[in-house]
Image 1: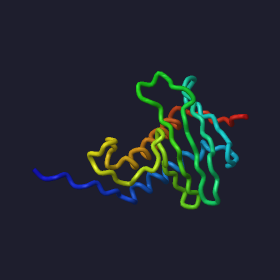
Image 2 (image 1 turned 120 degrees about the vertical axis):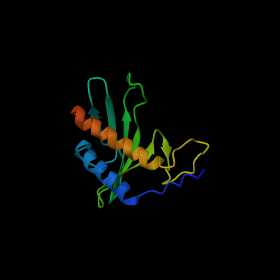
Image 3 (image 1 turned 30 degrees about the vertical axis):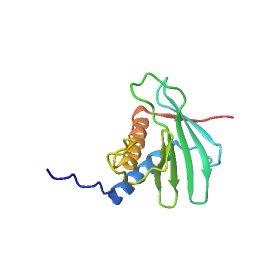
Image 4 (image 1 turned 120 degrees about the horizontal axis):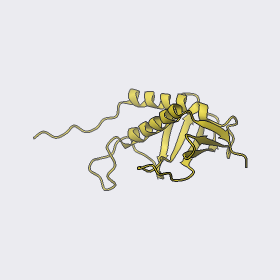
Length: 145
């Protein structure tokens, strides 16, 4: 029996995914990119997410996307922290469901049962969620504090 080859990330594929995420995330962003700015994203009458600007730097912005309430979905709704790289036009998930510091490759098996390509998978989850927003005809409204 031959051993399965170790997972090796494909950087061009990952960067392409991050570029698509940036393009799909851009219409959801608040008009102002100031810390504390919030946007309410409604997918339907029961599914709402809050997008909040956490950090603004000259070339990057960090956003948090969280569900406002748990719906009757059979799976947990996603919660992301996303770093936007404005100069490169990339959006990368830096935290998913509270798990920070995602590595490019994990040994498998591991004690946390993370997949070898966990970082790619959470960025793919963001891509799928953004596609769902577009397909559902999302409503994005500023949150007035």
